[in-house]
Length: 321
Image (cartoon, rainbow, N blue to C red; front, top):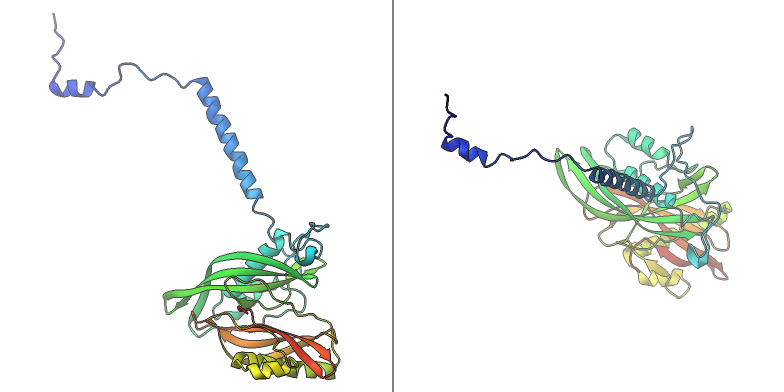
């Protein structure tokens, strides 16, 4: 009669890790709980995606961005408890401004590609031209953008957006710093669009004024342009005596350029009405301390007509007063 082989030491060691009985099948209740959890997390994920808010719609045939504006404003929205058709409370404003600024600050030597990317966001008649100057062999990228505030003014909206920049040159990257820009938006028949060049502001800082587009007679426009140019030059030179003279004996409200920005001259001055309270947008070449890239940025000058001529009320370059 054959005998069962004696168990070896290795076999006895392996037997300790073998289950004496097969594992029980999963209970029906456990399967149902797992399925319920999966459905619950699916609803949570969908709710989070809906909470991100509306983004700019697909552009129309003319390539401009189209966004939806609510028909009724929210009570108390904007400055003084009112706003233009809920434009401030609509997340489309921050989405449009943020998307535009990312494209605006992402630039290299390919100007055609840069202009093509911006076109879908721009209002009719707005042309960025060569408002950013990039040194040869240099590229700038944006790795982070964040809207921080929104304000309504004169039927438009201005969104302040932070952007963190990286600069690439000869295959090497370097820190471009975090900058804040005010992006002006207007509401066209098809939706929101960018109505002017972004202008720098302090980190963070509320929006300033938007240039009004009412026309001026040629002679009046020349006078406004001359006073506004002089006011910006006085601001950049920190010539307080001249500013007091331009203000009619009292210094205008002043917001200099944000810390670290340096200018290299005025390019053009654009004057607008109404005639009794004209506004001028003075374009200057400027660059932040963190990068060598130069920007054309607007400084807004608010003026008023008085018995002694055109007086300056405010010079707004975006910095801390």
